[in-house]
Amino acid sequence: MNRILFKEQKGDYILRSNDPRFEHVRGVLRLQVGDTFDVGVINGKAGKAEVTKINAEAFHVTVNWCEAPPALFPIILYIAYSRPQTAKKILFEASVFGVSKICFFPSSKTDPGFPKSSIWTERKWESILIQGAEQAFQTRIPELHQYETMTQAFEDASRHDKNIRKIALDLFETNGKLSDCMKNDSPLILALGPEGGWSKSDRKRMDKYGFQRLEMGNRVMRCESALISALAIIYSQRGWM
Image 1: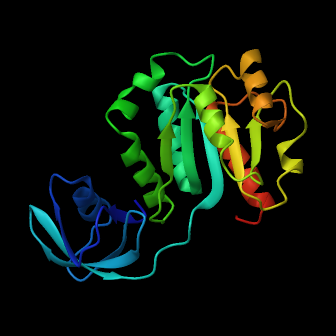
Image 2 (image 1 turned 180 degrees about the horizontal axis):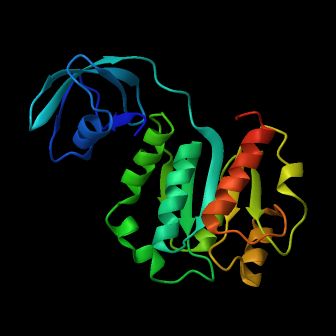
């Protein structure tokens, strides 16, 4: 945790021993009374917290609030459901990179059990997005949407501004390289397929909804590696990193 996030803005907080943040402040940061650390409110302001009291059961802190960190980047991800462990990595890295929205949908190769994972049914995705923002020293987290079908997802993508660019990463049937197409700063939708890649029917649907298929070379990557690589290319081309 590079910045500890709270759900609501207050002047004072108590971090109790059953809160993972308590152990981070005590065991990792090893703070004492009078020491400060970085905090924030989810999708709100950043601040500096000062430790005012310590005992075996809790840390008491007072916060001096500052400005809100910058807005998220104008990139929307459309991601086909993958294995739960892969989905966790995707959620975390997408939040670290600061994309504005993440949309999950089933493709033709999606295992029907993936959308039933506790990540989704128990809303565990929310804590993962928060962890990503804490890692990135930010407060804002991406919006998250889920769709029952790929068609629903892509129809929703088509409702965005007509100037938004729609790109799908592909390895086999492409129209060019991602690195050659990212120098403008227009809003962007980026779609990634599941483990196993896109099917023929998936590609037909992407063509129907105006997605351009681009590649990053001929090496087969894991989904989370492909996401990190693609965002690094886009951010570098647009001067965001």
